[in-house]
Length: 424
Image 1: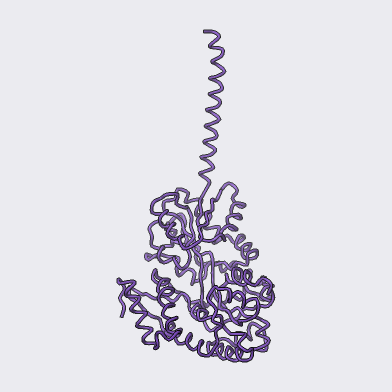
Image 2: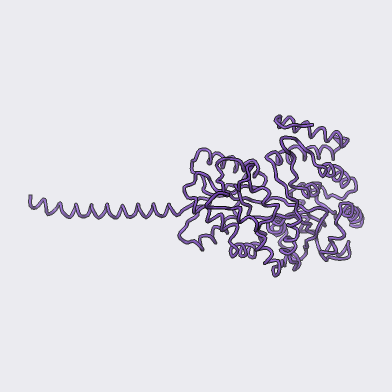
């Protein structure tokens, strides 16, 4: 018995130590998990912000999940509804913001302790236009401002317009009729090698954001009727290069100078022009076109059932309102933020070698203040992309011969797709 007791005591002691150590490890793991949040997005651009956030808050870990492709919103809705591995923070593309904004799984950021309404005045009005739900509560905050402009080839502008100065170029292309006149002349003088625009979508995209529905009624804005006239006129006058949107022809034209003018938003500089034509640095400029517009944009929301809301809000606030971070993002990523204070400060010093030394933050800061403020509806993306564009193509191909027939076809298709809407 005595021998047994001597052997048994060390065993008990070792087991006790193991239990204590195990408990400490479990507690450490629990503490670490308490300082983690999960962020979902449909692109990888949030990676930069996460890196900077973790540098500023080294005690917080961000688990980032990038879900590219068309299934992102479906997966996001499923995760939020089932609470199965749902993210604490998630991004929503501008095209989907209105279909998501009233979903109950988006945290109300107007209420305490967040009080996001007090922060929103730092943002451009057109960004604020889609941050609130139908009851006026902030449910998503847009960290990206996307005013549009006309990107133009400086070498072609010198050759055909006699100048590449942005203000002088702007004065020559401030109406579609002026652009069409230039397009006709350039097409003839170049022997059909240079055109004013890539395709008819360049015209339509310059009116992005105009709602199609108001108070449950289908409303076709007068500008969409003008687009019907403009795209047919552009084709008849041989202004268009007729490249497929997003196709190889568009990318090649950026490199070889086959097109003069490209309507595009802020993000096009980084993700379209630099990506498709990296060797053309210095050959580009920004000009004001016939319309002020915005294209795209990304919003960030918090899961209403998250148990890490304090950390989630810290990340959201950092991404939208931390001036030091936003200044770094703008300078290092050529990223035009939604924060007017930051952009106005940078406008005084930041220039782009790719844009021939132009002060692009100053340009876009002015353009952003001219963007019309629209509140999108959950119907807009489908009506615009699946119905209006289809009818436009039929109209251009003369499968639909008159403007009146085109309008009636649009109304018919909207009524079939959305029977709950009033269509007259």
